[in-house]
Length: 452
Ligand SMILES: *Cc1c(COP(=O)(O)O)cnc(C)c1O
Image (cartoon, rainbow, N blue to C red; front, side):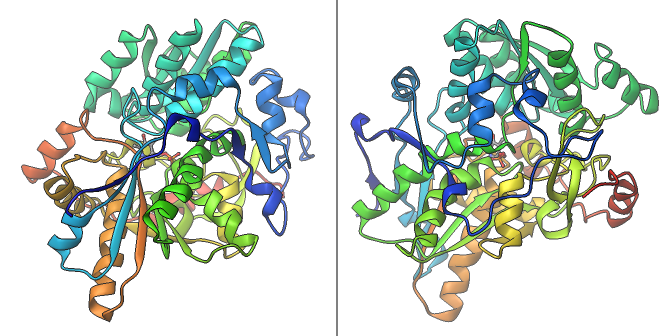
């Protein structure tokens, strides 16, 4: 049988989010106030987030109930299917068995709505009128625009300028859902004006766009800020992916040996990996975990593990993470969602504990893997997702070399139907690899805050 698909029914949509903190051997380091260097409290975050999300951010409970209205909306695309990639296995002539969890069937085409919907829900419950946010390639902005619309919230998006130019239809999509979109850096915020003054042609970065969105929320009563990755509560919401995948791999009767996902801020990786990692920590299963990042923006494999700002204008609290420095400007690769200087503190923490592995891959090799996947499985992956596919294919080829069969599960975090310009550039030979710019990172590390 060439096509093998493992489906669950709508009653199988998880009833709780899974919190990895409950099963970790040590808690992640405290988040610090940049002024005092002391751990922050809920009140410090209150201007930016509703209390329900702040509570989740610091929770140590293993299970956090998913509100029924959120589960109801999840039915639009959850449970998401899990496939075995038999045609890809055949093409690679590998003894490995490759499975993928497909998150691209959500309304906006990626895993991002898994957290956009609960974030909009909790903000609405708290009486908030408007959400401000950043977006890289536009996946997060479209997810929040969609979720905001469902709950009657206004959504204002600061979109990294290079992506604003590379992906015009993502902007159209956000506008279709009623959001307003600004190319970042913009002249609408003090942070944006500062970066424009330094470099009028700045391609922008997630770090800058976050500064603009945070400034907007902090300076307006009825506006809260919403982040699409990195934070504990975002990773928490994404664990619906891994919880479903655990049951689907049971249906397949094939426990995974290796779990792989790409990592920009770390949310789709955590979403798939953390429920399995928790089970591993409880002694219920055994497997390896690989987070895959771009060679040009390699926070996990080349970054320092230290306290840094989450944004470029130093408006956020300090978090301990693998970072290339908040002033690091990643090259304009097409995987816009992976162009972030830092990494989720929880992902950094589990890497530091030796519980997961990290790997960096080059852009051209990723697109080659993406095309092989499209040719065999029929889904054109998002440029971000091709990083996971590259690593999955490399592991499958290693199995072939070693004559060993392993079960590989990766997260197909999103489709690339809005990223055809990237594929066009790839086919026309207009894309290049960018080596990690260690000099630029060293300069950015000069600007690290002096704490911790
Ligand atoms: C945003 C995005 C990513 C990267 O973000 P994470 O938080 O690391 O998951 C990866 N894949 C797709 C399709 C995305 O939209």
